[in-house]
Image: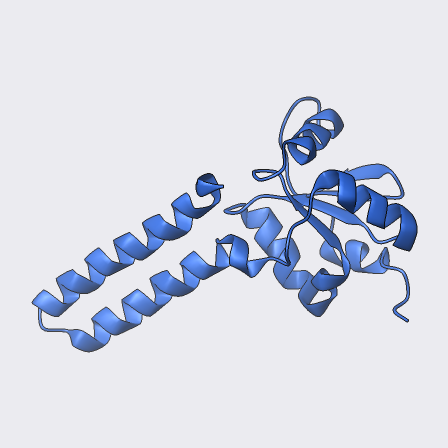
Length: 145
């Protein structure tokens, strides 16, 4: 679980150091701006930017019932972040599995990708798709009721 927070925490620490250097130089405005940029980047690369994750077994069970795709992801993955942002509000309609928190999810991704933990891996109707186009994923969602 801590692994998912290493990059965001590092970004905040680095941002704090850069901002401190700017304050020492007498540039308070630049310090605030830079710190804000680092905090936003940290937030985007943290698990907080993604819908709540569930376990792989539960996600597959729910997907079998409601027909929604399962997205295997991990914090800090720029392709996962791209998918999440481009899906917008539709992202909440998918089942998200953080492979760093769920060993079964990591095993499912490795099985689908010849031993690699390549994410995002989206499972639609039992078939895995590696780093699919977000518009395609949105098209795989069942109509909302």
